[in-house]
Image 1 (cartoon, one colour):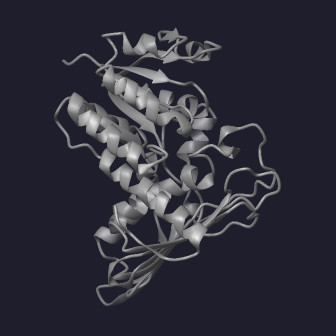
Image 2 (cartoon, rainbow, N blue to C red; image 1 turned 90 degrees about the horizontal axis):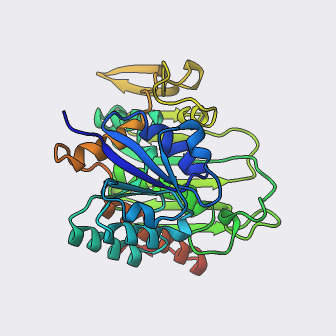
Image 3 (cartoon, rainbow, N blue to C red; image 1 turned 90 degrees about the vertical axis):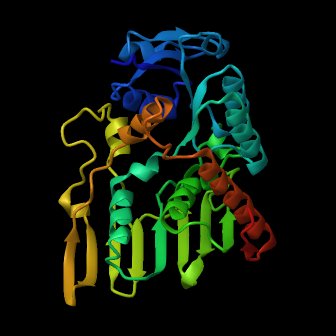
Length: 351
């Protein structure tokens, strides 16, 4: 039996504490061995076996650490990933991959040069609603899809002061934070768009970084994909709406895994990732010449599948699901969208 792959986690803030550590510890092929915390040792309270170290150099110099997971603010991803690769470690980095496509290109080339695995934590590919949509499209239950809307709205009218996400630093703002998830999902479902047009702005008083986006992707066969997010929407709107030549799929609510992780639950909990029936999507379509209208059960979400794939790929028994080149494409689309918003014009997509 293979020994578990030993993991070093850089950062125990929201992302490290909520998304990474509890998911990693539920994958038998991985062992959370060390956590970098500069001021506290909070991780040791929940994971008493881990070694808490104050500096990343302890991870880089530890030959027992196989995989480094970077959960620092996105403004700092590039130097941490670069240093970890140069230290001979496999690397997983929290999304967004980098702040520029040039940085992403450099890190991809370095990972290949070092012969190490590099992946980006696009966990939203394993949201239950997204898994359901992938299966829906695979079975062509909507016919030829002509229009899609992805929305990530909240009611959060007060901009948080003093936080890096609401700063003027490169990589801050809601578009890098949430928009990159939708861009990754759109790329997975429909491939590279032909055009992109964006309206990215600040709506709330006191915001230093963008807190609103409305982005339209023009794809082959006339498909239009609209991606939206606002912090000033109090009334719930559909999370996903897809329309095609046979019918429509409309889904409210957000995958339950994040809220469960915030409450301290782990993927080992019974019924993990399963959504209540009241949040199942409405499907209105034609199947075999019959009109079908009703609820479509959401497939269970599974964030552990991301890390299981990382372990399997490191061991050489599976293809990497989230390739760095894919994550780089999302960063390039962010750059083009920001340019589109500044210049108020539709951009041709060139990677």
